[in-house]
Length: 297
Image (tube, rainbow, N blue to C red; front, side):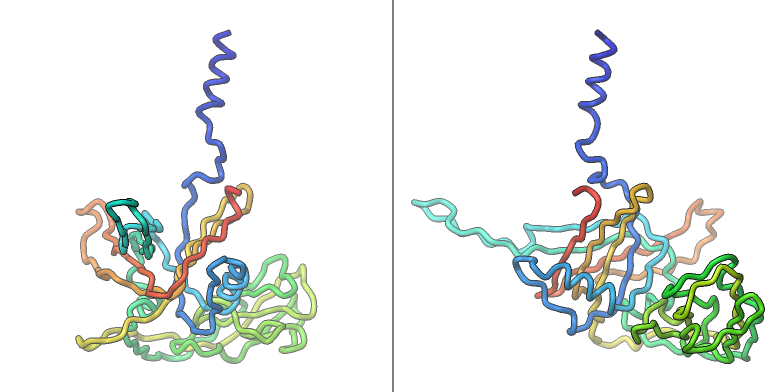
């Protein structure tokens, strides 16, 4: 009897839908907003079109090493309420304020700082470096997959003198593989990095690449202290359930960075921790918000 009661108690304590719990870490990505992004319809009938367009056309960079990421939807930010003596409340409306916030540890990532702040950047080149035998895949490369080359040039230009070798056999550009271009002619991959896409066939052999690139000797970033326009951004948070392989993705379309960007200079051994910089992305008027949900359906 007591055993049955205990089992029933456990069942009552369990979540109705475990995948709907807020227990998945979110990865934050930021990219530049474009007016070519389709306008979200009020009835959400084109939400899949908008999300798919963003994923395929907006170049995102990861805002890496974040904690306490959250999406706040404040329905009391711009509240309008009309009350009458004889009918009570006859009108209530709100324009929700939507923000994506958290704490960012890798605030020294100049690629991301440049995107979210609009600061100007200058990279200074050093001498060319030759790479020989960088392994793209030790056992298998797949058709149509994008394979990122490890190093990038100081000005984000395509790496030079590329030679791709499949188990001792040289491959032919635009016949066996493309460089920085997908088979459909689009350009994807990681911002600033060159990449290979195999278009002829997959291979179970070791594939490696030789190339030359010119790294930065130094990089400058900064701004004059004057009134300046803030960049318009698209921010998305992707959270993956590693067991089911399903994701939830939240998009804040046409937003701005509204917070202090803090660079801390501390002795982490003395402080016992690293100091992160808070981030706060807030919607712009007439912006949009979409949550694409696979988990918790």
